Image (cartoon, rainbow, N blue to C red):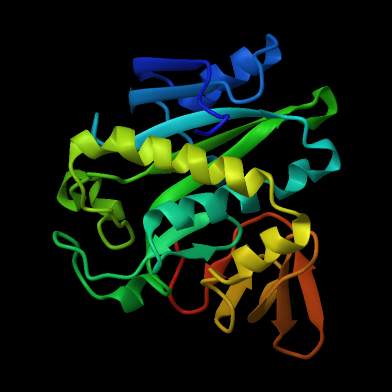
Length: 249
């Protein structure tokens, strides 16, 4: 059994599980403390986006992580590897930590090409205070979401596991187990596992500083890009778009 998930606070509704988990962590909650919710009124993703899901149809969970030392910066990669394993063998990761599935998906218009390497089935948001020895790993997974029930702007880019609402708890337990194992991976093994799921490698990407071809990640998890005019650069966090396809959200 995973060492994560104990103690656990389950809420019928909350602003966001990350908000509550951060409060608990700042108050001294131990490693593995887990907050889940059936619904969120202010779920958040990276870049300030909202995370929308019908009540009871998505896994909404945040886990307090302690004792990572200098490796807190790798938590987004750790979480992405764990979530992708739960999502299935076809799951891919859009750097740094969106998890994608290939389509087609019932209720979603268009083809896979509209979303590049796939459609987003899960998002991850890691927050915290490494200087105080803690972070929170927040995960949202569309377990039993029907795409037609999502906001219209997500219909062309969202994915679902296509399971039943009663499966949300099972997916939670699977995720806690895989996250526990991923946290224990040596850095080289973690990077190898992430690279095996890389959904951007070889694709044209654009960002605020230019355009290039995604060439994997380096030893600290930065996205390596081969520049159009020659040379390479490494990106930390930030917004990356698939060239000609818009944002893969």
